[in-house]
Length: 149
Image 1 (cartoon, helix red, strand yellow):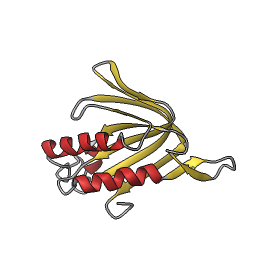
Image 2 (cartoon, rainbow, N blue to C red; image 1 turned 90 degrees about the vertical axis):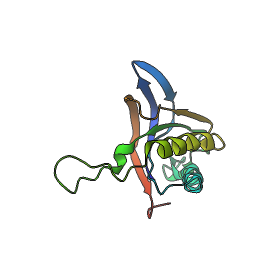
Image 3 (cartoon, rainbow, N blue to C red; image 1 turned 30 degrees about the vertical axis):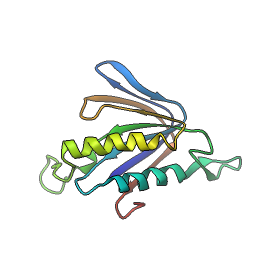
């Protein structure tokens, strides 16, 4: 699993010209799934994201979690996080999970997230999406196997 977390003041996702998900202060979560990923890894990732202390406290120190600030999340599937650019100029996506497996874990990620976050919005798996955001900081964190999972 590869996850890019962007701390945002707001974010939205659009499909076919229609906004289908929109949040205020919180995280835009770009989620890439591999064939080796499991529901247990999803649960561990969601719990880790919920506990991340990357919001500023009154002293401008990153001591607050998303729960501390009643933050919201927008989850967008992104298989391109598995782009392998080592050979040639056209990325290979062979490391990305098979569509049925990846979609299943993406949906599980969304449902499991609802146990933790104040508001969970999301995109559509496999759709051509337009994502808009205002990155707060900017502050971006990458979580993947060996780096937080």
